[in-house]
Amino acid sequence: MEASSDESKRAKTRKLKYRFSDLKGIIFGIDTPEEDKLAIIGVIDERCRKENRKEFEFYQAHYSKHTGKIEALPLNLIKLSETRSASVPKIAILGWGSLLWDKSHKEFDERHEDWRLDGPVLKLEFSRKSASRLNALTLVIDPIHGQQCQVAYAMSKRATPQGAIADLRAREKTKRENIGCIFGDGSRRQGRDANSIDVISQWAKDKSIDVVLWTDLPGSFDGVAKMDFLDAAVNHVRQLPPEGKAIAAEYVWRAPDFVVTPLRKTLQSEPWFRKPIPA
Image (cartoon, rainbow, N blue to C red; front, side, top):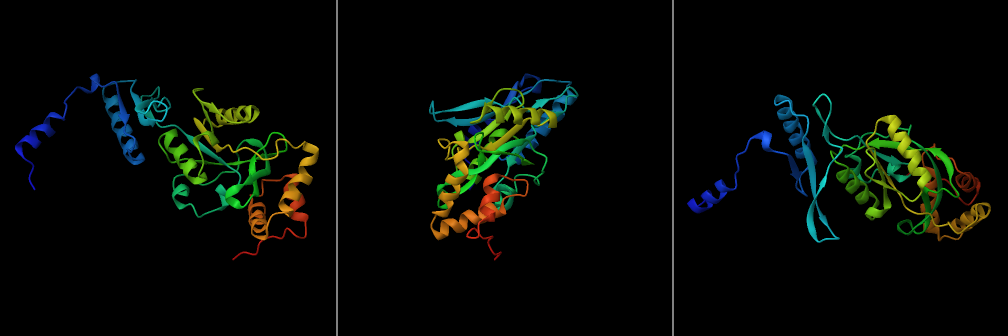
């Protein structure tokens, strides 16, 4: 069906002509695909080079539950460098558990590069009772009971931190408050343990990484003294039903080799905590 003359006129009035020098910035829509953002950034970069322009602002539209309105957040990490070439932020996702070995989340895995093993050194332990795994114990950052382990990281393929955060949230099926982050420009720092945030921040600075994200779920033994934790955790696993115990065994035995903790050593030495037979 051909458009009416009135519709054609309305469409034409929505097309604005302007000089690029008058354009201060651009706002990406909520549903703008990542590949389109990268393409637009490239076009802007080229125009800025041609016009010897050193500043251009990028924003991301998002829905604010607090105000009930669509708001535009500045993407401060996307900028024109001193050589006037546009750059997108380097975003790293930290991992130490099933993110590395559970390959059933294809969409998430396609949105990051391969895992690297020279991440920051953080205190980890199998100290979270995971409801989604029938109360099997899973790995979390645990400043009280944790053992220092050098974790892995993977670089996100996303053009914006918001996109990478959405990926990790969807993969972990969790709330935004459970995603830890540090932004190299100092604009955002979120995490349950201040010391871990400092360690991650310094690591990111040393690696010239702009944004670091990680799953920041709480442990379940905060009220247990460090000297009593091992017995409490082993007893918890021992009392799980058979299916829960099998899930716990799979999680502990399949954890990366860099995860070496007292609880893992103890559980793997127990005759009733057998290594799962590969299917």
